[in-house]
Length: 527
Image (cartoon, rainbow, N blue to C red):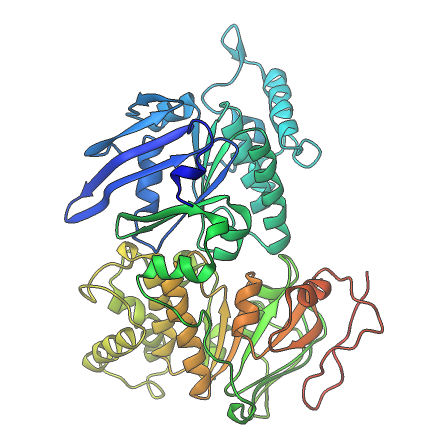
């Protein structure tokens, strides 16, 4: 059945033959899409496919060279985002447009505060905020007078949605709304979206997480290189169909093959009875050739575990053994000297110097080591450049020049630069925290392949991810954290239900989980 045969009523928003150009780039090429009220319409594509450009055209941030926009059946032209917002089209960007030092009420009504005789009426503003929050059933969770900066990421996102609703939004555009959320927070957002959908609001949903796209949307549009490949009902397509349309080729496997038992070698890292203020009683082994996944809800201690291992926030008790030698890293430099690499979850603020060239970023860590430990890392500048080119080529960093500033790369290529930085050090134990957050599907597949390739070469990999399909697809075994401790270990291909059973602290005391080789069974805690 074709798209036109499935149209129900009048679209609330329609773009016809939209073309948008930037210097040297055709960002959108004759794109036409219809969006219907009371429907979640997903827009997917690789980085650079044109998704964000299309959203900004509809939201009034960009003027197209050609094409037309129709809103509620009438042709419109928005010369400024405020015009689109006042008309009823609101956009929520991945990076929030909020003021952390202002209250919730001040953020929702910034620039249009109710006043009496020229003085802001704070009581009225807070009452109006409560009424808006009631529409999202969030009035008991978020108070109008609290500072926004004290809220969690998920709560701040609710404030962004409330702000949009306060403009009587009829179309809500959401750009990567779940990228920074843990699994339980995604559920909260999903419930909000379903409430908005039930009220007849059209939700335009951009996400690289195809599982949630297929679960949540009723209609899906695929863009590639600025061209609309297809719009269809979500029930008519599979993940394989969508991936193939996005990348222009068939991907037989979304995840690479796991390690075989004979490929897994000696224990590279062993943590014994280790604790600090954030994690407790950590017992963990990682072997050469395997990828150990770390699952758990936000606040469970996943990142705190990586920080403790790497010496960012060191263990205060217990031991770390590397090849059987006891060690306890007090600072990251010790971990790096011992062959550890750490790809953090925030590549822009912690992993890269955005205004520096790719080559400098790739060599950032190794040059620091050269300055501190010249005897151990005696490379010269020419060898440095050759090394930067070599590892970047191996990681398939797509760039016209290694002198290009990292800020101009796509998210996927930025992540590949971070990986290249650590590959250059020759690390043998890797800690990956959200290795594919916010990047497109082809870049994800590429990074998955590189992680598995590292394991095949004898590297030990610890991979933290809030995406359960990624944990399940990539891990040779999975540890689950809850309340700052490891509450269980599961074998390869564990189910989402098994992981969530442990991640929510709901396992029974007598449930036995697969024990690590040579160790007692993992402790299971009950609520």
